[in-house]
Amino acid sequence: MSIAVKGLLFDMDGTLVDSRSCIELLWRNWALRHKLDFADIQAVMHGRRGIETIQIVAPHLDAQSEVELLLAEEALMLEGIVAIAGAHELLSSLAPHQWAVVTSAPRDLALAKLAFAGLPLPQHIVGADDVKDGKPHPAPFQMGAAKLGLSADQCLAFEDASAGIRSAHAAGAAVCLVTSAGGHDDSGLAQWQVEHYAQLNVESSPDSINVSFKSNE
Image (cartoon, rainbow, N blue to C red; front, side, top):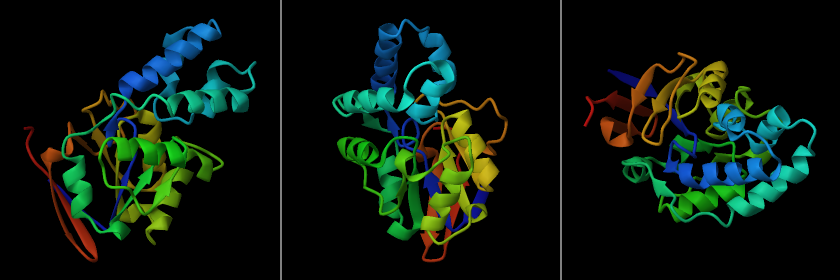
């Protein structure tokens, strides 16, 4: 199976880097502080901006001030973050105008995580602070494609969470689920699924990217 596109759009947490241990510890501690059930948070947090997660699970709190505290903590918790297998090779093979990161993390934190994991830094990035409406709204992936000079339907998006998959699909992009860091899709909208990027064969020219899906390795 293969698809020809003009751009690749990547979520970050769980898609380019495995940061599960850091993020779950962060939210567990926050849940304890506010006497909330972590299971309720875990059910909605993946793929969403922190401010929207807080608005859902704790509407009585000041979401803006809470997320600022969480982000300050997260910036100090980079230890343990690792790149998803094959991500470095894939990103290094692409021209800067062919890919963008579309993440629910703030831009500066996203760049810090990518650098810590040893991944190439994107020339084009959409972070939590760049959009009014986060995933699952289509705006993040629409903006990511626009930064490449493309429409979303000319792109393939890589995601690990249902909120992100819904966002990419609503924007018009084709979607591939990445499962290496526990990713799953309960939306049924991802057309492809890989564990990691070594299961892809990517050939690019200045005007096109052909992505072939190998058998599991």
